[in-house]
Amino acid sequence: MKGPDFAACAFSKGFILYWLHNKRVPKMKSTITFICTLYISAICAQPARITALEESLPGKPGLELVKGYRQLSEWYFEEKFYEKAAEMARQAYDEAKKLSWDFEMALALNREGKALANIPSRRNTSKSKAFKSFLESNTLTTDKALRLDNFEHLKALATTLDKQKELQAILRDIAAAKGENAAPTVNREGSRSLFGRKRRELQANTKNLETELSQMTEEQAALQKMVQNKEAALRSLSAAQISQELLLSEKERMLDSLTYSSILDSLELAHKEFVVKEQNAELQKLDAELAFKESQRNLFLAIAGIILLAAIGLFHRYHILRRHSAVLEEKNRIIVEERERSEGLLLNILPLAVAEELKKNGFAEARHYDSATVLFTDFEGFSEISKRLSPHKLVQDLHYAFTHFDQIIGKYGLEKIKTIGDAYMCAGGLPRTDAAPPLDVVKAALDIQKFLDHWNGERREKGEPLFEARIGIHTGPLVAGVVGEKKFAYDIWGDTVNLASRMESNGKPGKVNISAATFSYIKNAFDCEYRGKVPAKNVGEVEMYFVTAARA
Image 1 (cartoon, rainbow, N blue to C red):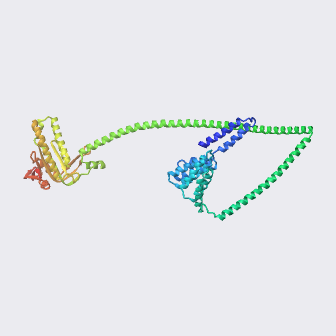
Image 2: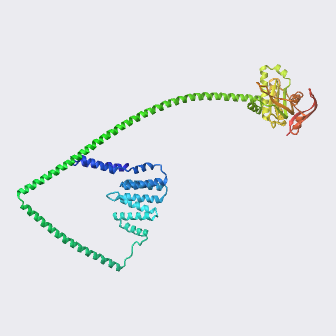
Image 3: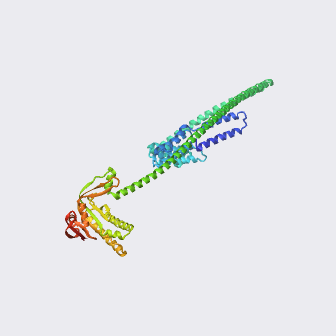
């Protein structure tokens, strides 16, 4: 039992015990106290079905929750816990209102009104609230049976609360709901007939009352006569008879007293035996509880010890794994950095496609290209330049020049092949055939000469030897591939390479010398100066052109 019901039962039990202990009934006090305690406890015990339903309600959805509260209200009403019944009905109403279910709201108000109507109060406050609940219920429903039930309770409450005006309206509503006339008209003849019938009934009742009065008068006279006869008999008794009668009466009284005392003693003994048994049961219960708590404590300590050991083991394992993970992460980071460095070095040596093929297969196949454009550069008078510069300065200047060459050919998608001393070789159209056509190779050559012209202007102002380059270009078939096992080198072979070298050696400083084959590809995009057939070593006479400028 919860809330107000528990408080009400406790108050009732306390009040009865207080009253019994303040009465002067010493021998019956304990027995009556015990009996009344059992009685109140029985009254206050809450049925298991109510407890079970109350515990199952939280978390139920929608209509189930509404019906659950309404069922609780009905059960509390059956147990005569009217205030709890009204409270549960109000809960059902509130939940139904959240869901806008008018019929469920009307049912809940009907149940609330029935519970409130049964709660006693001096000023009929609960009945007034019940009256309002039934009225509101009828505004929420059109169900005929429910409306008639509300009207019947409203009629009874209106009579109790002396609401004559409301009673007349309710009677009309009941008649309308049942399909009858609210106030059937009575004609004058009917009124006379009704009046005559009532008068005859009153006359008959008057005759009956007169007959009963006559009988009662006769009975009274007979009783008075009997009393007079008894008094005369008593007066005629002797003193010895009176004494004997008194002694007999005293003995009977004493016997009744002894019998009564015996009953009281038996009740008190039974009560004491019950108290002893109850105390023994309580002691056994306490012993069982102590044993259970002790076993619970031991179990808790065992579980706590296991959990603590597991936690220590897990923490130790976590610490080891974390340290191992940190070592692995560091090693992985180093491996990734080394791999990236290795791949970067590999890409500086080999083209991307060739490097991927080499990583995938462990080797790279040499490939034949039907058309590729080879570019050679060589510095004029490099031997004299090397004599004038220190080795450190010479290497520094070569690095500066070739770094810019790398940037320029990278801009046009050319592939750097190698450098030999002061010579620089690159090619277009490999390893991808769509990379750097002859037009882009010539543009790269002009940009290299442009860079050298600007750099030599700075060197001239400083009095440093000039780096003037001859550039030769030829287009034709060749073979490209990787040679070596330990130090990979990507290289190209074929007559195209030799002719490009002859274009460079037969060129002039600051000029871009191209073959007729290359000219056929770029003639519409650049202005060229025909040089005629120029003898080339081990080749014979070859047609050559100087590229002067790109056409607008």
